Image (cartoon, rainbow, N blue to C red; front, side, top):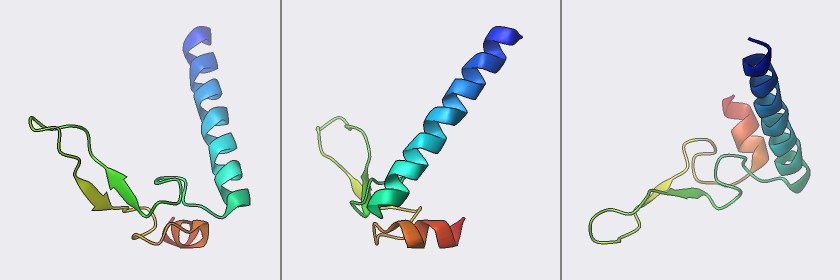
Length: 68
């Protein structure tokens, strides 16, 4: 269990570092400030972009934090 706990702690620390970096830059952590998310390839290599659900398409950290 020690290895699993260490991994989970590392993962949480990495996520918190990502959140703090995005907060400093004023960008949404989910979409990196783009305002949209790109879904993976489909059979025609077409990128489907959808509005970010974390910030409702604004790309701002403040919007993301308000929805949390």
